[in-house]
Image (cartoon, rainbow, N blue to C red; front, top):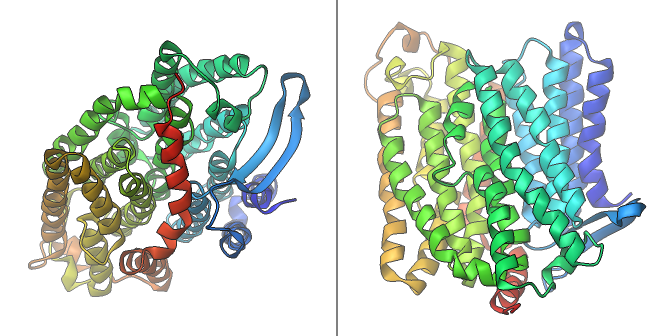
Length: 490
């Protein structure tokens, strides 16, 4: 079994073990097995880094085996400079989420941990799949564990949020399935994604395919105006569910643009780039303003995620190397920062059982160590230099300015808006005198929470101070991707 198969199936195997043998009266053992499974899933991805050749844009660690012979469907895996980091990011975030959920989940612990482990393997499968049906299978299968995580362990309106999440994302994906079948016919009976990239498609076919894929991926990102499911889901989801949703699942949609929409329909992508850029700038500016008036911390960070993901799609559709690379870097950085922001909210919620900003005030007086972590993540969310949140946004702004100064200026307002709503929340929650007895009775983070936040803090600082290892992996692939997209298929 190759490294990519191990990365996919190791966490799924441990998840299956927990479903089969775990019981609530064995909760301690279940948690340790889940942690071992998450660490094993991360361990098998680590050899990918030293084995990756940064000098080629070709797919690496390729595995291929027949799956459904009658329809020429293959179990075909591989990674390039675009997908590489998301495999490691998914495995890393899974470890952090298992640690984060150690004490907060007390019922059906085995099912909760199993859902996260299985979800981790399925998401890695999305990033590795080189066969259209295999991609679609993994892409849709991720809905099931996340639906259960929201619907079983969520808040008071969890059923509504779970249905809204499932229906929005499933309906968008149905058009993608039609597009995949069309491409299968056009390719003479092949579901190989690389073959689809080379198909000579007409202008009409490209436009229809582009919008079919757009329906699936824009909802998943989510782009404005199909973002309305995200705040509701974040508010109701358990802390671990919010962290994985923001850190990884939103990236599946943005990744789909790079793997399907743009290389398969490059002429349509360039023709309709103005639309994507417009929607992205609305997300950056308008949704940033919406975030400023939120009273619920989770809703504020959820709207912040929509604004930050607007940077990603903006970077992709300005069609220059620094913009596309910046969009990918922003996806990785947002994975670290958004997970950290939601986990910080979870730490407070576990103690006070409120996400309302008005319920807090002066937390620094009783939780100084925790506040130091929260300040770092708030600064990263606002795009402070030397944090992960700055690198991708700066690259996208630079790429946008190369295309059009006013576009770059509009994108740059995100740094002001991000600082406004993030620091406004931080001031009201953490600074000033102790606001009430709930805050007065708070205890600082324990060693488990320190480890969880410390891992994310190291990732945020490492990427912010020295992003070169991240960009080196993707540079050659991005350059080849742009050459392909620039070549007309008409």
